[in-house]
Length: 434
Image (tube, rainbow, N blue to C red):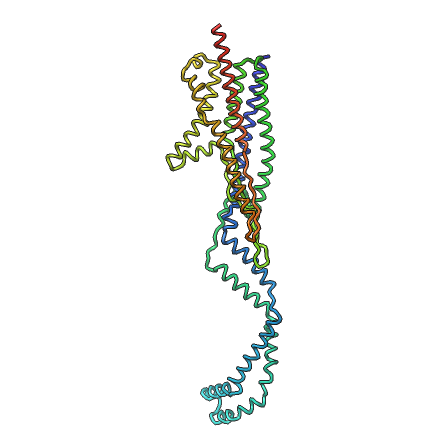
């Protein structure tokens, strides 16, 4: 019966490890989607994008120009100005005979009008003009011209629109290729809207799968650990501690390889009123990062500064390598007399293990989360409470990720394992001493 229980618990932990591996794949896939969403919707492509501002401003101004209508009072002013202009034209060119004389001189030069006839016409031109009474027709001509201007008001709107386009968009400017196109193509789309919709649906779908998988893995591993503690006397101390160490290794691997914290700050909406029209920008990412302990470690090690490399190596050693070695040695310590009597093994289990940064790392992680969450919430709150006439809706999606849960649980199990080994060794010493 004892061996059957040990085999069943071992198989259960192996199944938990397999489900944990599947969980890690799901979280990695979701992180990829989230990073793509953050990259596509960065504030650089929205509020800080001059081309987008131009497009939105163009849309606002075009709508206003489409609604453009000259005030009736303007046409009265036009009619008045045309009266004055036509009156001056009549006096300077027609009633003075200047226009007629210029035409007669040109006709004489070209030989089309005999000089004698030209002089005769020039003498009588003043009486002819007065007989036509053209000055009395000026108000009528003015009204006709004003009516023509009013009739072609739509052409004026077109001229205004063309002038606006010329101001906002230089025809000589080269077309800037959207840097996000490779992301669209990667997911089989050709626009921001379609890619956003697809990725958001995938993230939401994975949320459900990940939450279910976390519950399953956590229930299996912790359930079997509790079972080992309850059956400690039945399956024996050595087997129980070994199985708990195996569970700890599973939790450690999941904890260091899965994201620990999602730092996610966004402007959900930004609206500004320009000449009576709301100019809006949709959800934009201010900052997004989702990293596991391994990700952070490799980032530090690959950094240029020697100080970064040293910190990265220390985290790798004391938060990953040492805890793993300690767990493996702890199990081997139970079975092998040589290891049990080895000063090196005892030093690692009893002394070096105490210098593991696992517990310190967990505290630092929670402090970082609380700090980042508080700072981001405060800063976004200040932006949202602005009194400058524009509307800003901010969101803080920062949260602890599954890696934090598994790593914290590993730290607790590691302490329990150490206590159990110490008690087991004490009993063994008593037996040998007796």
